[in-house]
Image (cartoon, helix red, strand yellow):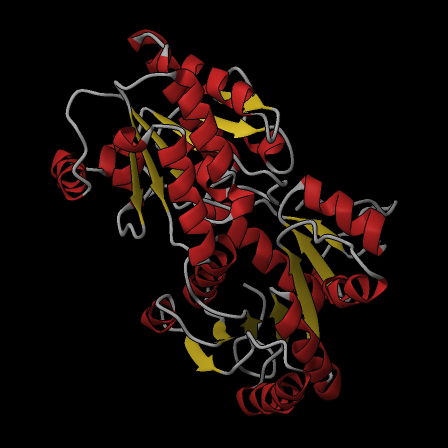
Length: 396
């Protein structure tokens, strides 16, 4: 740990729209926990949510503001409120993790001479010039963190983030939680009972929010192509739009696979859920910036079938820890699922060990948090940082 600033520990303020389920939200909580454990002061501003309690429980401070709003008047008011927070709490670094709150956070940081960091959590679509300008706030950080090589390339090529500012930090998994040896048989049996899963049949699971781009309709079509009724397919995730849920339900009935499908809106024990699965599917129609469920499932030793784009190409070793199949191709997805279900016990055991080893080597939570704090130290304690002689993207 470097010496405290002005006789006190450094203070970091993370800003995120809401603290609900999701990779960006979980990463915010994990970094806050790591900061307090390292002796720093951790503050988080959001519009609230179930994960806010974890901030305070770890010794951090959560402050509620309507930073999820895209209303220009509310965003302007948020600038003043964030500036007061920066001054009142002696914030040294503001770390923005989403576009709408990033505009307010950037303006507040400029008004208070505070350091400003952003995280690209995905490759934001371009659309109109106005949309490009709106997205560009994420490229204005003194340090810009990208959660994968895929996202880093997008930030550099589309938004001109130079190698001197761009840092690649892969998302991490808490290996103390996502560890198959830590999940009791009772937890698994309890979840199977709650979900009323049939005994003795393979479980094919698609975790993730029930949105169109997560590929639920392709998943339903792939299962229909398999033509098997001796399996159970579970979709685990909250519905964001009721209209899409109705469309998904209609597709399940139209394809004649209603008897093999379960849709679970909420799950409080994802490690046990993964242990129930014989294969985990990520069928995203558009590229994921990272793909948290892909890494969590591998940490639990489960075979993964994912669409071949975005961050998945960096987290799966195709043919070794899982399968990559073309996006929006239900037939290819069906073939990948069949390959996973056809593994012999010895092949399944070997794949599980390879997947667990792969995640432990490249995606532990501690590594993500330590590298994020190292980025903060670059800004606060530049004399202690050794930069490359020739600028290049620093994969910290």
